[in-house]
Image 1 (cartoon, rainbow, N blue to C red):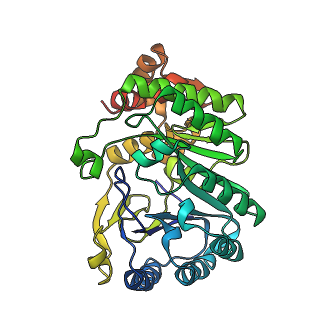
Image 2: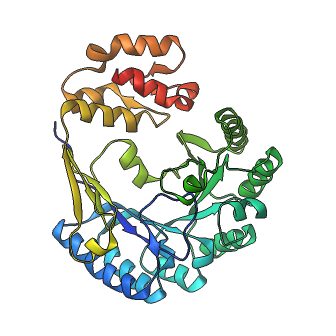
Length: 366
């Protein structure tokens, strides 16, 4: 099995101005002295991993926009040198820590895609989610980004959290659609162990209610021309996230920073989640060498998240045998239940199968 050299770079910025009660990502509260030291070691790790040029760069967190203007410019000036011409350069931001001057820096250093943590338009919902902005500020940031020439904008959107009513959901649908951004990511509340919500015993809405909310949301977006191209992601034509497609097509990538992970074809590495260890130059926590079974599971786990699935010819080229030679019986069972389908040389989930992806994967792995 031969895979191309990694063409995507993920950069993790762990700093936040406050900690959201549902978040399980590697993060710490922002302190200037930590941020300055962190950027130094981030560059050291990039050098050790021999980072060259990439078609996609993605700066995530944490909250990358929590960095000061000086720190943000330091980071972006460094990363911009690693972007291929015509590449996608994405950065996550929260509305309250972004500003016109920081947006100017994004423009200056070639950031051409911004993902804003909007989450909801309903004041009570934002308070429940521990957010420190209102939707008017989200709209203002979208306007400022467009004025700066950054039109590839995505909004993160949460649903299915405690106290959310159908009326709240419909208000969110109207508000998010009113901004006419080209990409939306809609996530249900998942209670991860160790988060504030989990410790407090907060309960999300029932699975049935969450599914009902999602179907309402999905149908409303479809009517406005948004394509559901992945389990939780919707885009207007030409605006799929190129970086995330690297993950969902199970292609190699490099990750740097606290808690970041990388995939080099037949091995995966995960960095330490300890800021203290990272600031000592002790980046890597674990390396996993993948056998054929793990590689196959990862391939299905990622590619079947996409509505287009995977091409049978790509599968055979990747693994050296045809999909049907090993999985035909399982495919037939799932197909008879309306969960998987074969179309134009591709294996993909149906709309129902995408909603029941865990069931599909368990039966394929069995």
